[in-house]
Image 1 (spheres, rainbow, N blue to C red):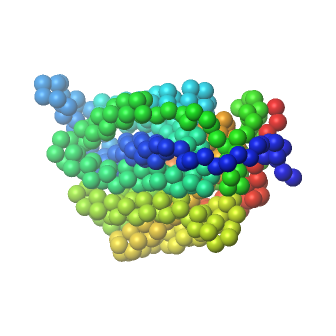
Image 2: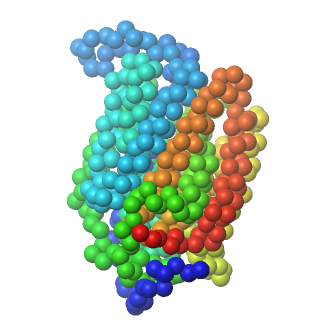
Image 3: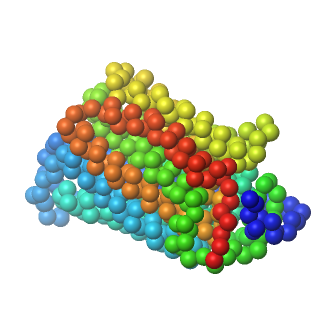
Length: 442
């Protein structure tokens, strides 16, 4: 049955494309890059923190020497990751509402400032517990990035461009993961590991000023459906918790719950995987990571473009979106073999393919929210999905820490990573057939 809201809109002639929308996309890209640089630092430093006792020296000349030592085990590292994931899940509940209430121009700099201060706070840590506290506050701040970015994309881009725009800014997650292996080992080897946590602070400050000065919501908010421009009536005033009553919300949330942990696994455990499986130390681990994340950037942009290619072949826009997600889910499958590989570059090849496919999947699953809900509720629905993804990541991290501590094998983790996407797609299509638009009622 068609949605009454869709039936009551007045079709108008398509206006010129909104000027400045690609500038907005570039700002989202930079913010996401900084976001992922901040969260990647600890995972790159893990091989030197794990199983080693570090006697901390003064951070600045003249400061007193700290006699505390740090010795990080696999289980402890899993708990530290859990602190980030739990805080991410808690924070995103409020972050989506904050961005919907304050708007992207005011809400986005707030969450960026919180995560940047937390990231720099890692430099003051003197214990494993301290890392847990720092990661908790980092998760609180970083939880706001994607609700704000997806909302800004829904405000500025029509459906036919949203997945491409999302793919472009989402590629910042790969670029941040690329820049981190370049910067972090060099800084850690020359200035100490604590200095590595400070390098992105200045970039965050510059970005906040840039965004606050440049970003404005389009004067006339436009909704888009079935490939034509429409001026919709105002969305019904709906309490946020009522959105949980829609199958579309749960389809999106379950998709994130199953697949987000795979990306977290890559971010938080790949340096350790290369170190334990192939004996790559801090000075040699950068190149494989850079190759994986460079190629995943291609997947993010390519996956965002893929629905447009399917539309050109005659598919409907939403059918093309689902087709792109199926393609990405199939391309991930070979990663299930990565746990038993003996060649580092074969592993890099499979990881590059899987990471690229994940980024393409991510660009499209995020865009399904604006396909199924009005722009007024995009931030909130995205936040539900982020909560689900963070909780899935927390469960995965706890399980992964114990599996690696007991078996020293990554094979079970890679098997899960290979099949999660197909399961998620089946659930999404079952709960939201054809990405049908939600029939919102007060």
